[in-house]
Amino acid sequence: MSQRCCQKLRQTTEMMNWKTFSVSLLFIVFGWSSWINVNGLWVEVTLLVQRLPEGWNLPTYIIVIIQAANIGPLFYSISVFLLKKYKGDNSKRKNAFETSVIFIIVGVGALSALLLSFYWDTTSYIDGVEHSTVLLTLVFLLSLVNCTSSVTFLPFLAHFKPVYMTALYVGAGMSGLLPAIFAFIQGSGEYTCVLVNSTINRTDNSNLQPKYAELLFTMQDFFLTLFVMLVTSFVAFSILRYSQFCKGERIDQKCPSHAVTYHKTVDLPEPHSELVDSDDSSNPTVNKLDQVSLSFSQFSALLSIMAFICALSNGFLPSIQIYSLLPYGQIYYSMGLKLAILSDPLACFLGFFGMSKRSVVIGVLTSIVTASAAYIIVLASFSPVPPLQGQTAAIAMVLIWMMFIGTVSYLKLLISNLVKQSDRGHSGLLWLGIFTQIGSLVGAVLALLLTTVFQLYSSAPQCSTLAA
Image (tube, rainbow, N blue to C red):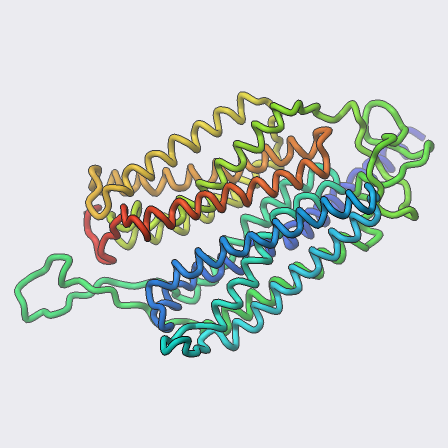
């Protein structure tokens, strides 16, 4: 009898593990729709500036448009507030609104990627000046989608078990990694330095010019690939939201008194727990004793840290990345870009092996982020001739970029997981998304002022040899 019970328990455990793995995959696929469009544009920017009339002014246009798209999360946050104020704290209505917005933004993102694949090079004249009007319009739509994902994806995750927080962040990291892999296969931005004007007896950098590699597939194919990935994200979200298979992984449903829980105490649902649908079947609920209590000052500190690290990682440092890496040569610039992008999802994978809730860990990681960012900012300010030169300095800069991106990604995961499991719940994750965008906006505006308006940073030539 005991052997039969053990066997049944083993089968149940295996089924639960398989279910957790399957739902985690769905969250990864759903999560990569967060910023895949904007990241896809950035990895193709080298090709775009060669073919569009804006030239190297195009990245500045894109940065400004991305920040203007923050009207999306602002409008959504105001809508949630008004819905709660005038319609009451009706969870079913609130969840329906949240679901509709996610469907709209992922759908608009997919449609924009599809249109971009066919019309990215269409131009028109405004006041006699040629502009990439279609691309810039679609960039706004893509940015609107991606910015709004910051205030919708995390609150949606509040309805599920905490274990899926890691999967969502891995997916978000893949939104940068996958376009970078496609661009690498395509040959986007890859070049070699060749000697020009060989009749002149000079071999310094002024005679070296970049020669770009031929593309393995076109930009249309690249954007169509992004479209397909967004369609899969749309399908993944539909399954997460409506399938019976995933409903068992939700924690915000009404649980009858006879329901089985996986916690140590209390079988009853919380009296103020948010409900999804009145017809949901019984499921494990979040036990109030399992929650972390966050005071106003603690929650404010977490929001401030999130805004700070997002200002650095999403806004400021990406704008000066070229000034910190290119002085050491094209090889280290390319290596730094790729390895930094790779370190994002890899760091998030650590979440599958456990996450600390201790404030001292968050403090240490924040210090590492601050120190590595300071190193990058200071050395970038000396571009095109940084004080530290040679191969060792070049490798050190690449490693520091990896440490910075990896630590930021893991720190975001820790903070989000802590808020998710706290008494702040759904509204806490919404505020976390809002502060993510506030920080990103402040960092991007600051970078735009320093690099474009005040021109405090000077770019190195594409064929630099300081690391030799």
